Image 1 (cartoon, one colour):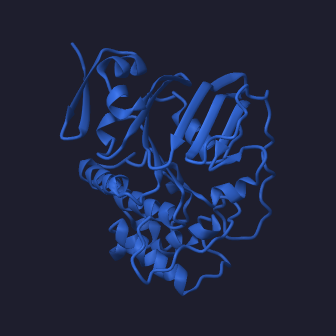
Image 2 (tube, one colour; image 1 turned 90 degrees about the horizontal axis):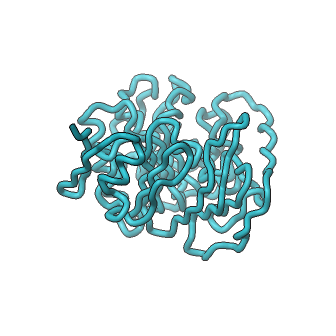
Image 3 (cartoon, one colour; image 1 turned 60 degrees about the vertical axis):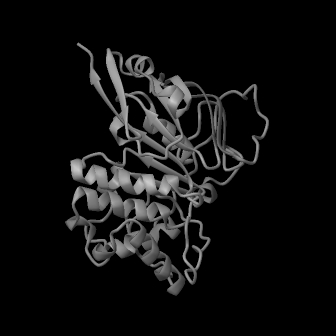
Length: 307
């Protein structure tokens, strides 16, 4: 993350959980237990590998949400994860965000093995922006306070202790996402596009090593989507930007500057690798189960059904 001269780096804090939405004090939920069989590839990944999954499956109520996932995300890579509803995209992001454990297989995040590390420490190093978070933010929360509270991993300010370093960081992130004029507005009065940009500023507040974007353009109109794509493209193209993974249903939302792609269908990988290798008419048609035509123009994609 780019920090101009004079702007202090983010303070190191370990928040309780990004799912905390209420102001009153309450004990955190117990950590989920890791389960399943050892992976046949238990070796610690290379230090440049930010996310490493080996033969990962996640099963709920006898239903496999993910199966046989082997995936590496390296420093400076920007990944788009594409697939239809029910493909397992959000589940994949939740694994990468240290929110759930795999049923079997091995997951390493930021060099730490899931099941052998305090997940709250990991979450402090990961930025998450998701359209699903909007319903959990208190409607009367000020934009400035929402962004600032990211250091504590809470969605509503309560008794946190902030100082001038936090305020300087907030100003930088609001400016980066072009929401400075909204700083004193309450979240409930923002448009969908303004909310998404605010949540992205919040996700960047702690200068994360890994930035996860779960359908960040959901609910946006054309103008809002294009503003968001432009902002994400600038972040993706900057050499000091974080490693990024973005989930989307729509190829039109993939920002210029993204380097890799994964296509998922029914919890399994259809294709993964360099963007130009994966983004083909054949792969897209297999992923969505219908004959599609994929077009590319000016580093942007579009798709339509073939007649």
